[in-house]
Image (cartoon, rainbow, N blue to C red; front, side):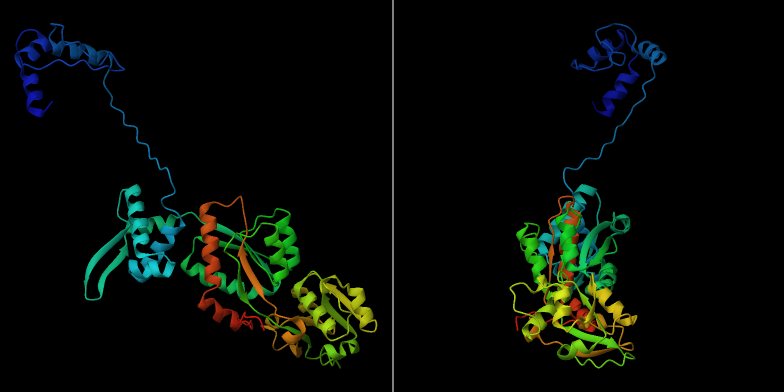
Length: 402
């Protein structure tokens, strides 16, 4: 019914009430079922409709209610679009932002349009440009969403020797991804492996040796296609600058009064045992990590050995002076240049490669946002920018077999 018809009904002064008005105006009667019969008025009655309405208004005033319900069947504003919008906000270009996040230009616009359709407003504004193309900006409404985006936390298990460099990498990563909280668990790779196998929640495992990652993969706990080698390292023999030691390296290790050595399940402990085995100090065995600390001591003429749970504790034992010498990684001497002397850098011919692999771990508790953030952080760790950071902390980024 249009407005003119309503006005004609309102101005009707003839007989028959509502029915009379309908007859005069030649309006077809249509019966519509309603839930509230107090509102419906049977037009066949000849009562004056104004009086009817007045009586009904006394009984019940009509109070319209509107129920608004927002529904969505899928996660349209997940981390993928969030990362993309952050890049657009930084770079001012959808194309450049897509390249930065590793997605196609068409995929990027598909994400943007999907988000805008569901949200009901524009999140990316474009202005035409000249020969260099237009400029894209995140709208104020889009920026509000980014500011309020819920934080995603990922659990990253890292070998103790990675703690310093990974702290810096997390800081750099959070400059562009402030809503991703990176929580580290730093310990020996063997301890971390055991924790994961026991059910500790973990999204990423960054091991100091292939052995632990191999075991995790055989357990079916590594996400297919996510494993990659990141850095190489070298074992070094260290002492305090004021120790006055006669030791020059592994060759005359037995001349020390005390020696800090990681256990066999700790990668640096295994590599040290491997080097001593290849030098003929220890007997040849299939698994050097199985050689006990007591057996190492006996082979070194009864040398007093302080077994440590991880490489950081080995370093502390030497720095604090509780042990005269110790074997650690070259990367662990970063920041201790004024306190420690490196007596020997043990060659790869004795230890083999000291490769650090990384992979995403199967985590049944993780949601899509968590998995996406974990994958993105792994790609960041593998980036050229991250390589420069690793090198500044004395890691070797050449992971080719030697």
